[in-house]
Image (cartoon, rainbow, N blue to C red; front, top):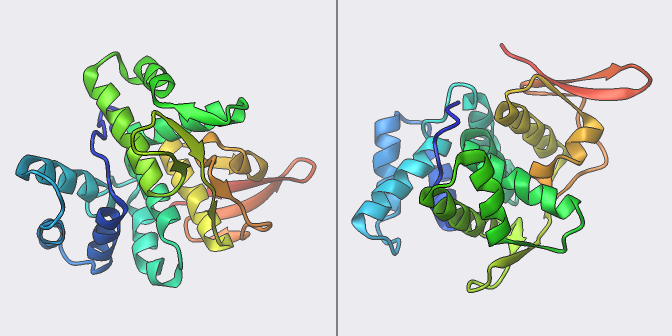
Length: 235
């Protein structure tokens, strides 16, 4: 995936849900994009902002990269089986939006270091080191924090520049799917189960006790002395 695609839109949960619903219909991309634009007609956005928001949502749920296509397709097929779809948005954004993936990771590293809250200014500093010292990066961080709040991995007052962690519960099947999304985002072939549970990108995930041994696009192997590894499979 291109590392230079910068997500500079804040994506409200109703808009993400609309994009997922449109994608689940599995029509052609032109029709899906048109349907998504219609679904966002009443969103409080100016015309140009609405166009850019549709483009950002489409990049995740309608026309993902080839590498992320299987991840997104699984979510669209199984969304009606899942009570809380917010983890699906987390995984899809992780797999399709490199900027958001880096922002998740930097947020998680701050929490892992013991911070009770994360500050938007510190996230800007860290993301500039990765993506360059540009105003668009600062804007992307601010809007990315809003998106993280929208999907429930962060919480904070609208006017506050600090955010606290907010946890999401997931099922074993979604846990395996998130592992697959992480491997796509990292362009990696495998991840240890213990490493998955401590991945900074998933700072807000409360993992189930068991992760399936096999799942679509994923297999679990044992290496060495009891080290369990999730391996990405490709058809």
